[in-house]
Image (cartoon, rainbow, N blue to C red; front, side):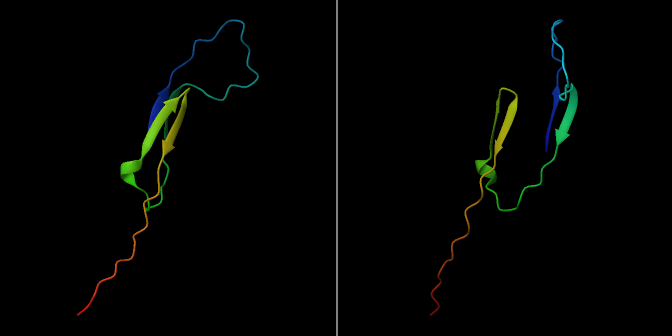
Length: 69
């Protein structure tokens, strides 16, 4: 899950909005992930207010041959 808090931006007197959808306050988001991920390869970055989370898939198990005597 991801949680955070948006701060109220300082508004300029001469700015008018037709619609303002990003309000200030706390938020949280939970996202279900499939079971076949590589938890050691997860990375996240925040750039210009955009959070990017990369979750790589785990490598598939390779078949192993066992010799029986």
